[in-house]
Length: 115
Image (tube, rainbow, N blue to C red; front, side, top):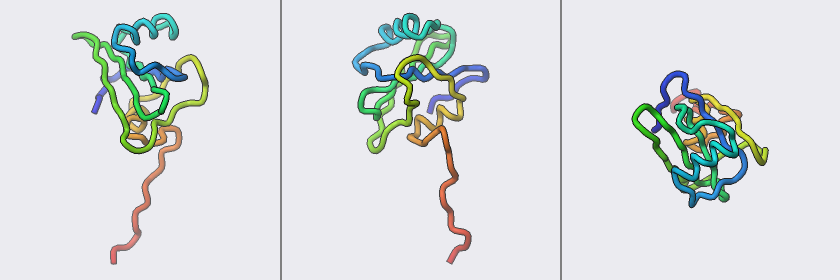
């Protein structure tokens, strides 16, 4: 699980990203397409074509990290816009990375009585 420090912003890169891209190419995409600094400490999340794979680019004080997550079943919930960037909170990112609809998280059903 990725734990972000307080004040870390999380950005979703809208649209589809070629998942063959590596750390340097994604950092260039952050600079050119999103007009942001990839070394500012923010997290940038990119989604693949099939919506079951994401890459998270994150620079901290030590260096740049690239995390990859693939869902075996289901897909990641993503905004419908085709370009740009959307900011989400750290708790929304946690839901997103677990495959939960971060836009409308709901409690799971639990029985009211045991028996």
